Amino acid sequence: MVGAARGDAVSIHLIGGGRSEDYAGEVYEVFLEEAAARASVSGRQLARVAVLLVGGGDDAPIFARAYREQLLRTAPCEPVVMQVAEGELFASAVLTDIDALLIGGGHTPSYLEAVMPLVAEIRLLVADGLPYAGFSAGSMIASDRAIIGGWQIGGVPVCPEEAGEDLDELTVVEGLGLVDLAIDVHAAQWGTLSRLIAATEAGLVDGGVAIDEFTVLIVGDGDLRVEGAGSVWKVTTDPNGVLVGTLGA
Image (tube, rainbow, N blue to C red; front, side, top):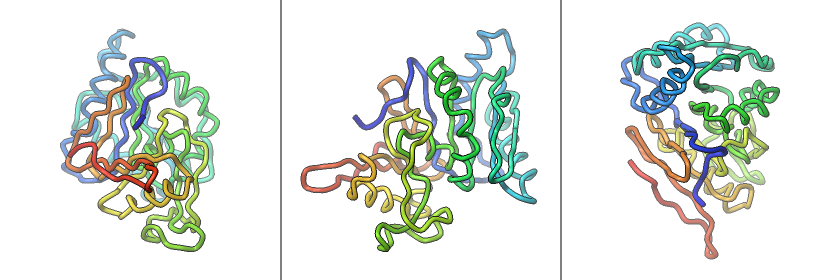
């Protein structure tokens, strides 16, 4: 199986990153359509989209504004942006009365740490049909077994050091458990496809996908769909090694 979402009739939207002030928002279109459909069931005209962000330092307000403006450029909605500093944790109240959840990008280990108190509740909400979108880090942590960083295996480089997330050894931990495949991001732009290949070959993960920037992999009820400007690179195991191909462009 290339990948599957956990739950019935729910979509997981895995975005490979990519920022632009004038981006039209193609990777968010289906996500916000699903959010609007869920909102209508609750009698709301605008979908309330929780946006969880971690870190950013002095630029945190700029990042918050960028996510809010991007969603509003894509479709009418009510973005509810909540931020914590690296090392802090989100409270469960951030998931109250929402129609969709977007977890943003930044330092991946810090994102996973920040949402750990919410994992069980996120799984329940998504299984109940809450649309989930991950942007970069938010995509990586969505996995059962999540690659959260590192650029070496046994001291041997497997991707650029700049993509290591402040970790040296390639690190795989338990993630949110929303999809059954490992995720890497910024694939063509940061050279992280080789990290996923190496992790698969080393047996750290059972294959997965590496997603280009401005590209989304939508994992639905047994279906996979690719939208956006780039490709989704599929890595699978094989008796003779590792196989690499693309799911779409």
